Length: 229
Ligand code: CA
Image (cartoon, rainbow, N blue to C red):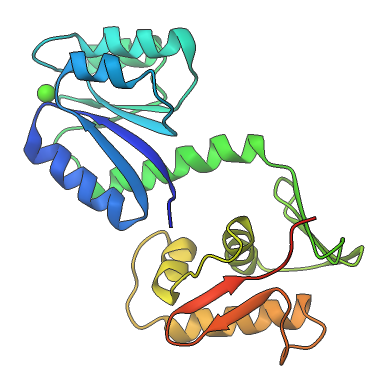
């Protein structure tokens, strides 16, 4: 599962390695720039989010931030030193979306990354429709319609259904689904996911024994098999 493309601009390998591995564990594709020069070259490519250390040996991080802003509104999370409030204020002033103060918890950073991506993506998407209008998902209003008739899902059920439906035919393991629901890994919650899937099926499927939307892949997880209109 690819949750998005992230660029990390950070000269301290110890930090970029940790952040990279946490992001990759959550399905992100990660590119690391160890110098400002490399960053300036890489920002011409398309990323979903950029994590930018302001203190780089060769090029000023703030300069990189304003260079990005000249051509893109990609979310930028700055990494700043503990003491430097001035640095933070300046960074936000030149277009960064958020900052994380070093030393930081990688989990917290990943949570922020996800929150920013949710925000950007919300603006882009409207309605998904499957099986000739048999199932419609409005991602903005969170409305679900089964053959035109509104049905009610809990917010957890909605999150699961939307995650599956956004990537048809991709298998999601129960662990991944728990992660989507909770925002982090949770052990022993496989049965909770099965219960949610069962509820979703009762609401969107005609015959839960022969689902046409969410299919169980034995030993692996679930995948969405609806056909996009
Ligand atoms: Ca640095």
